[in-house]
Length: 394
Image (cartoon, rainbow, N blue to C red):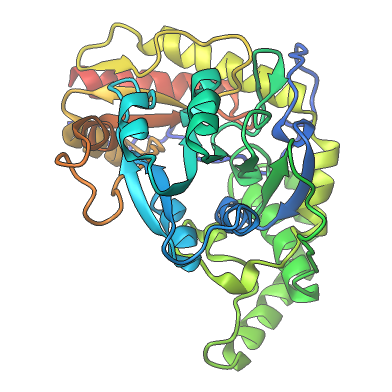
C-alpha cells in the first residue's frame, strides 16, 4: 500500500490555475483555436453553448438529437431543455464514432453531437458527408480541444456549430464558446451577469492560484483586501433570497446541472481578457511536452496502456488518458497517494450502460486521466510519474 504521509507530496492542480506558466516562453507550436473557426460568442460554459447551438439549429419538442454513448452527463440537460430526446450512438474501443450505428439511427433525427475526446480529433470528413446525406446538423463538441487543427483547419470548422470549454485550457473559473463557420450568430445576444459575477470570477481565479502556491507576491499584496472580500461574500450569501441565481454557474464547481438562467449571460471580463492574453501556441507547446513526458514515463507499465498510441500533429491534449485493466484498484491507490485523476464519463447518463454500447461502458469505467496542463511544474510531473509507477507495481 502506498504511503499517504510523504512530506514531499506536492499539491497538484487538476486543471489550469493562474500563474506565469501560460505566459512564459515556450517552444512555439503554431496551432489555431476553435475561435479561429468562425464567428464566436463567449458564454459561461460549454453546456450553455450546447443549448444555444441546439436553439440555433431549430431543435425543439419531438426532435431527436444523436449523442455519443460515451459522454459527459452535462451534454444531456441542454437537449432536454429544448424538449428533444437524446438518442445515444455507439463508439468504438478507441472512442471513434460508429458511423454505421449513426446511420441506423439518423432517420427522424435533427442533430448529431460528436466529441473530440481528450483533444484527439474524430475523422470529420466521413461524419460531415453522413450528416449531409441524412439532413443532420453537425455539432462539434470541442470541450476537450479548445486548441488544435484538423486537416489544416482549426477545430470546429467542420460542424454547423461548435462548442468549447475554455475552463479546461485557460486559468479561469468559468468560460465556454459557441462558434460557427457556416452560420451567422446575430441572434445570439448576450449580456453581463452583473458586478457580483465579475468580481467573483476574478477573485476566485486568483485564489485558486494562491491555493496551489502560485503568485505568492500577489497573494501577499492582496492579503487584506481578500480578507475583507471573504467577510463581504459571507454576508452577501446569507442575505440571498431562496431560489436566487448563483453568482457563478454550476459548471464552475464541477456540477453537471444546467441552469437556463445563464443562457443569455456573457463570459466574464476576466475570462475574456485571459483568452486574449494567453498564447494558444504556448499552451499547446507545454501541454504536448507534458503529455509526452507522461507517455514516456508510464508506457509499458503493467496493467495500463495509453488510450491513443501516438500524439498526432495538430492535437493539443486536455489530459493524458490511460486505460487500466483494474481501474478501481488503481484509482483508489492514486487517490490515496494524492495524484489528481480525471474519470471522464463516469458516471454516464442514467440508463446508458453496456446494453446501449459496451465500448462506452468499458471506457467510462476503465479510462483514468492525468493532468498535462501548462501550469504543471517539472517537479510535479516527476513526482506524479514516480507515484503512478509505484501504484502500478504495488
